[in-house]
Image (cartoon, rainbow, N blue to C red):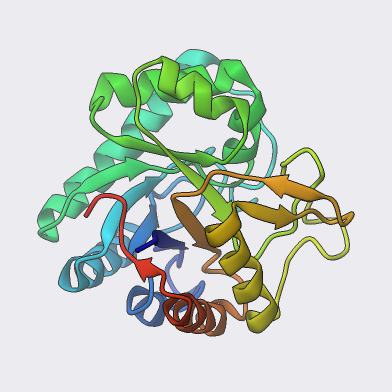
Length: 253
């Protein structure tokens, strides 16, 4: 039977400012990319999210990003190697400490936003994050954009890579994500998204924004927690995948 992981970006609320519905999403996903405080999240909220995830047996990933609270980590930056390495270690370590207090642990690293997209094709920044992971705990998995050069770069460096595809984002013909500034870059229809992901899981195929076909490896599907329809998308996706005989299970299970 085919299985796939379903992940979401969580723990991104900050003080009185709320982002997404962590409680609802944790009932639906099998892994959670939890903010580490650099692009979003505060320690109290992150700890609550980790405790909820631990109660439900959800696998935890460190959602590391640029030091960019104002821009939600979605602004391009060019940190020096030493800075990016130290920032990455700092974030994983902070989340690991909170996870231990919550009775769980960090199993993987998924870069966030602009760092994720930059790393996909920028070998220098990818190398810095890979180095940080290997310095902190080389057994941590790296979640990365399926089909991007970073996948082979990380594997060559000795890391285990989880190839990820995005349920709620449109793709360019070259396999990169369409810019959020582009019309149609964020998908909202739960049923259409579910059918799209079933095709991906069964055939390894995805339709790009121009109608061309992409072939992608996938061990995990992401639903952005800040997408307004995130909970509805996750519900529909679980239902449709289950109906197609696909098991939802964490890659770390």
